[in-house]
Structure formats: structure tokens, C-alpha cells
Length: 224
Image (cartoon, rainbow, N blue to C red):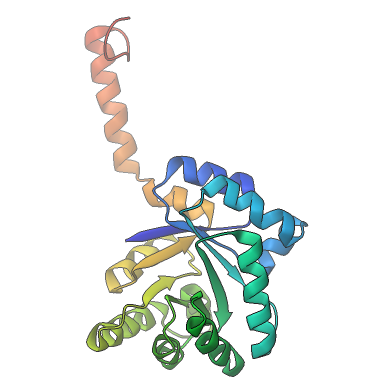
């Protein structure tokens, strides 16, 4: 299972990478815009924090296929190696995906809300498809079922395309999608923190410390 942090905030990314076993970072036009910085400043700063080998997923902003391809080339120059170009699963997006994959780009098909969209993107040879789980739930759909359906179809066809589940409300949703077949999840920093939190773990750690201190008078493992 791979985990990525979903933000363009460089300091949040730094903290997350110092703490968690992350494969990379996902951004989108909205998260970049919230930073108030231009891409030529944001992307190199993120790359400096995460290193050359981590994945950096960045989305095109053009709506037509030729524009998406131009955006992809520009993003690759700005972000350095191991860039995954996020392309929405529109008609022009599928056209752009085919061309970009043919040129050797790693592509993430984003804004997936139906299995049929994922099937087309997978057939185009993309590296990832990103279903928006909670956004689909809020619209009356079933995000977890979508992940399961895509995973079943991809496994049956032997496709190497990985499901990168995105848009989560809580950790239970994340856990269910992992069990449903998502190969990766991208989460905002707060949800990454919530993944590791559990009241019984905290109670156990507190109990161990109290017992140790009661016997030895200090929480230190060895006397200095």
C-alpha cells in the first residue's frame, strides 16, 4: 500500500515526509492557488523537500488536448524527475493521455467518478487512476464500491494501472478503500495524522509508562 500527501503547502509536506513512509505528493490547481505562489516557485520547493525519487503529481490546467500536452511538458521542466502529470478524464483528457503516454510521460487520470472512465484511462496506459471517493458519496454515489469495481476489472485484465484513491472524509473511508483494492491513497496532512491515532494505543502507551515509572522512578529506559 502506498500513501501520498495531498497538499501544496511546503511546510506541511516537510512535516509529513519527516514522519510517514510516503511515496510522494499530489497537488491540484486549487491547492496550489491557496499557496498564493506561482508554479515556478512552488514545484521546485516541493521537489527540494521530497527528494528526486519521490512522486510529484501535478495537474494540467488546459481544457483542450494540445494545451494539456503543452502543460505536461512545462510541468516536467519545472518539477524535475519522477513527475506524474494529472489529466482529467474528459474526452480531450483521454486524447491527451494517449499522446503523453506515447511520449513516455507518467500520467495520473484524475477526477474519476465512474468505472467506465477508469477503464478508458487504463486502456490508454496511464500509471494511476484517481477516483474521488467522498465527493462521489456526497453526490449520492458509492465511492468504495467504485474502487472495488475498478480493482476487480483491472485485475481481470491484468492492467498495471494503480488505483490512487482520493477525496476522503475520514479514516474509516480510507481503510475501506484500501481493503476494496486501492493500491494507493492520497490524504491531506490531518487525515495522515488521524490514520495512526487510536485511543487504545494511547491508553496502552500510558499504562506502560506508568508501570515503568512506578518501578524505576523515571521514564528513561536506562540510567544515564
